[in-house]
Image (cartoon, rainbow, N blue to C red; front, side, top):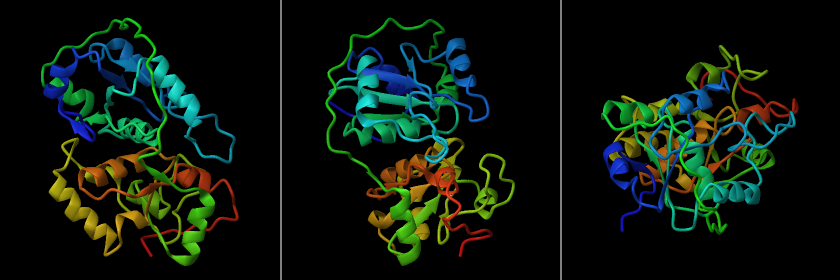
Amino acid sequence: MTFYRTLIDPHTLSQGLASPDWIVFDVRHDLANPDAGPAAYGAGHIPGALFLHTDSDLSAAKTGKNGRHPLPDRREFAARIASLGVSDNSQVIAYDASGGMFAARLWWMLRWLGHDRVAVLDGGWPAWIAAGLPTDARAPAPRAPGHFTIRAPLTRQVDAEQVLASVRNGDRLIVDARAADRFRGENETIDPVGGHIPGARNRFFRDNLADDRFKPAAVLHREWEQIFDGEEAASVVAQCGSGITACHNLLALEIAGLPGAALYPGSWSEWVSDPSRPVARGAEE
């Protein structure tokens, strides 16, 4: 049996929908309009797909110090997905309409629970529609709760103190997934402080895509090796504004055959919640 652990194409997904072990999650979202995802799902979705909300299902409550999309408790998140039918043998597929930026968050989170049978629909909802595949606006019948076992994480993460230590001693390469202008501290409209973590390099997550699909593995490998500039993937920390698009970079690294980088979940929004943490502006240092 074939399992998908990074990407899946629309036609392959359409052929697997009949399998009781396959479960699809719609995670369409708009950072500026939290109601957009549920509305889009209600208007039409992949048949049988269930909806997960980035703010409430894939994130915990905000405290003002833990960033805009803090990770939920592992056990609570595992219970949530099990209640929706995810089991140890489930092949999970995530899709969005944003080049995979939200689907990659779910991909990372399931790997964080130790579940590796999870993939992102390459091209997402637009690719499904472009392929002429069926859609459904009806809510699917509830699945029986799944038997899901939390296992050792297949991912790594670091916290703000570890990142601060790395800023001081240079033992990790920090890669920021935000757009170049926000990285430089320009046009910041989301977080209260503009700029980036000192020493970070910039790899805008959309640079992983061509026509809203992931670039071939060999291309991603070559481009990321240029970002690494001799560093190993195991020394890399991926961050962004709130821990969402950093997961897109981590997925790209997995596709490229460069696994092992860690996520800083709190990312920039957590970093700047403490004014004692250093901030850099302008281009890469």
